[in-house]
Amino acid sequence: MLRDRAPVYRLQTSTVLQRPLAEVWSFFARPRNLAAMTPGDQRFAFVGEVPETMRPGDTIDVNVGLGPVRMPWRTRIETIEPPRRFTDAQITGPFGVWFHEHEFVGDGDRTTVIDRVWYAPPFGPLGRLVHWLGLARRLRALFAHRERAAVLRFGAPHDTAP
Image: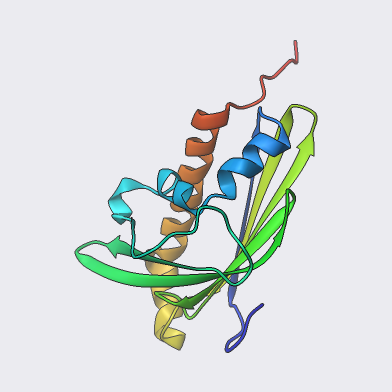
């Protein structure tokens, strides 16, 4: 899971979608769909070949933007347990540590998508300052965007309370 350094921070989000597990899994199991879930201001772009579906050991190369700076990011698919869970870990990229667990819990026509990320910014104490100054806020905004994009694609359950 986490190889060289221990993570410093953990982020967890949960989104309930109004679609069955098989349909939600099918979308998230295709790496190319990651682009549809990423905010445009990050200028996300795949580099090289992108697998049609994930397999353990696959690597995915992308470029992401932070302001005027473009950064390469390589992740490896670590585990896949269809249709319930997969994990990916940064091999090289903007973080000191990045490990992302995607969990899918079906309940009839609804699916809950749970994202858990363990991460550490680069540059030790300086990275912690960067985290405090805005990185944490940017990551929360990224996952809020992903939630909105998933709800737009799949719908959210309607509140049936009176």
